[in-house]
Length: 212
Image (tube, rainbow, N blue to C red; front, side, top):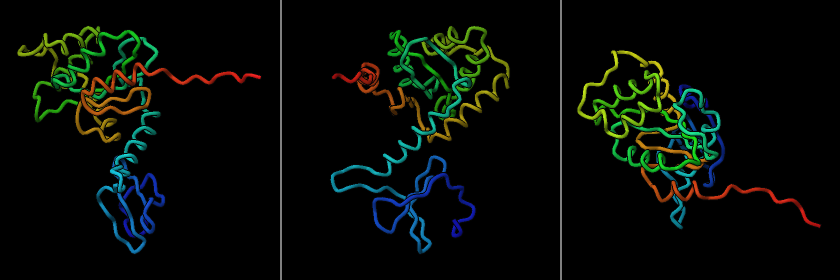
């Protein structure tokens, strides 16, 4: 775009409103008018549908497909894939963990996003888990509260680069809070256990053979 040469654009197409174009840049959604104006905001339909939020969801869902799962902490061997962005000291994240830990039908891919300004020990706990010989055991210790109020046995800087890589991936998806989950591609924001349960219990559509 000549009008805004410093803007790195990922997608550009006409919006539902005539004369306005949708721009996706990273996790952001903007709107552009050919006269050279950028609009920051959301478009809602008369029946209350947030078209901007739907576009953000679609962009994030597309990026989830390319997420490097080998960079995550893998927990479980179930058939349902759950991608989690979580904070070790977030009470809502622990609530989600408590729920998912009871299920045997999930494989969890966990990325840590410590909210340092709210949970000062979260970064150390994340690095402790990542540096442990048995990561799953360490994960359950931390999320079960066994490390709360105790010194975190991890040296300064250990697994810092891996943690920063996880945070970079979260930023690329527009994750600003925890927990944030994707279940078989569907996004869940927060500890919405009813929605999580509904998505996990929903049967995958299987194409039926044609009958003659």
